Amino acid sequence: MIELLTEWIESIRVTYGVNPYIFAGIYIGAIPIFWVGVYWLAKNLKNKKRLSGPILLMMGCAVSSYVYLLIAGENIPLWVYAIIVIMIIYALFEVRKQAVRKKQEVASEI
Image (tube, rainbow, N blue to C red; front, top):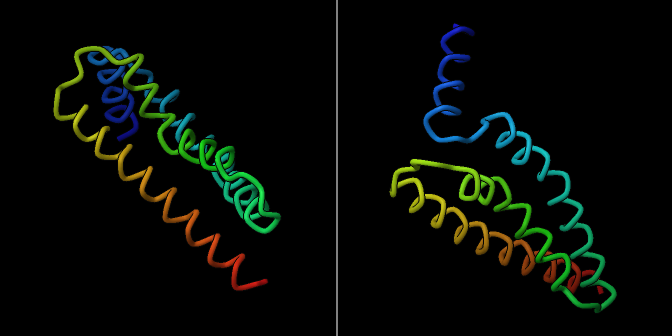
């Protein structure tokens, strides 16, 4: 089973020129940074400061692994690009929704 998984990962690396471990590392590594952005956003909302910094941080984290795929990838099918664009758009909407939710939470505390 592990041998099959290893072969599949190696085939992805050879076929598409993307290291799956780097992709996974970026994806997983961005999660705690994203939540730092959520905390920063809530703090800025409470203190009535600018929201652009935390929102940009959150959006960057949400799409960082896919940006790696777009930059490093080779021979990637068009449907993968379409899915990445859809995921980026979805991530942007989710970040916006998170910002609105935090804004409402902070407003209710005041």
